[in-house]
Image (cartoon, rainbow, N blue to C red; front, side):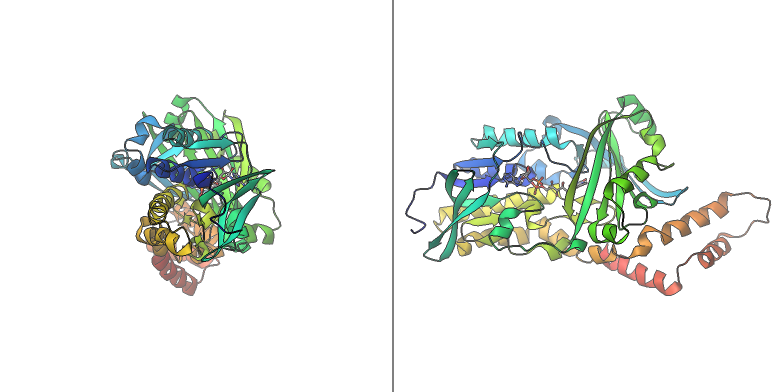
Length: 438
Ligand SMILES: Cc1cc2nc3c(=O)[nH]c(=O)nc-3n(C[C@H](O)[C@H](O)[C@H](O)COP(=O)(O)OP(=O)(O)OC[C@H]3O[C@@H](n4cnc5c(N)ncnc54)[C@H](O)[C@@H]3O)c2cc1C
């Protein structure tokens, strides 16, 4: 049978109603194409999990003024980066009101936010099929070689001119199309997250924010018991999103479980006061891609494209974790490329390669290139222990008036450095690598 033998049911099938899938579906429906959006969860967002800071400029291009209408929690105007030891913390606290307008970053809770995005797609004419898991790709021999022509879900087969794999980090579709192999463990992290409910006024007092403004804390060091990764603490309207992201290879090497590390983090004397009196209303765990540019492989084959985290699109720079904005950026590129391929009546790999060109020209691949060295930089163990201990040691000696004669800051720093396991060559090497990576 050839690809032309059976009429397609839709122009496009999108698998996965996360940010990548819903935005691709919405934009294609806006172009006048018939689109079905298939989601295995009972409702879009029901099972999805993010730390929750969405860098929103790209979404504002798709839905101008989205921050006024979408279920966003707070506009992030305060970014705190903290090195944590067992009993101390050293932070850099940037509070900038210009981050509020135009919208830069907002916190979202995925159950509400993904549902809102999928509703926008439905309003544009997308046919949403929740509670349906795609099990298999349908492939046939076309004039230009093997071509994806649809999907199978249970006993049902659906055909389309193009299938969009927006099925997230584990993308079974990208793997079954031969576009991706299983990522190595050091390119994957496991995230554990809880939502802790607290009264709005308590959050505003504890985090020194007002109105709809909010704070994002990125934390490294003892919060992960020295395991590669970090902790986060984000403010929502009347709850906090708190979690850890742990590099899978390092977690296994340390012989710990993610739940154990998370419990240690929640009980940490520096973190616990922020959470005091709160009630845990959500808890979940999810994989996250961490390989940066190295994870981005081929995103196009005959009849199919891959978007969002299914294509490995995430950036962890140590200061920010980004996946949702890259997912949306890839959706914009994919909708454009697919639209052009359908208009040219060429949905082979060659026709659909317009998507890859748009992706390469977008901020998504440009940012992945900028942070290309970040994953290997963040694999340096010293980031998660020795530097935090050194900084805490210096500040302790500056502030502790213990009756001994005072010393100049340079002497204090030199003595703290001598006590630390760090060597000068490590610091020079890490400093140089950090400058190039971040
Ligand atoms: C702990 C943690 C913290 C994070 N923090 C942040 C953050 O603060 N900011 C940020 O921008 N990013 C963050 N990320 C990353 C971000 O969550 C992802 O990059 C983003 O969700 C990717 O969007 P997506 O649409 O590509 O995939 P997803 O959001 O994973 O959506 C994929 C969808 O496909 C569906 N699906 C999968 N398989 C099938 C199938 N066979 N049939 C039908 N449906 C299917 C799933 O149910 C899901 O709805 C974090 C991730 C984790 C785990």
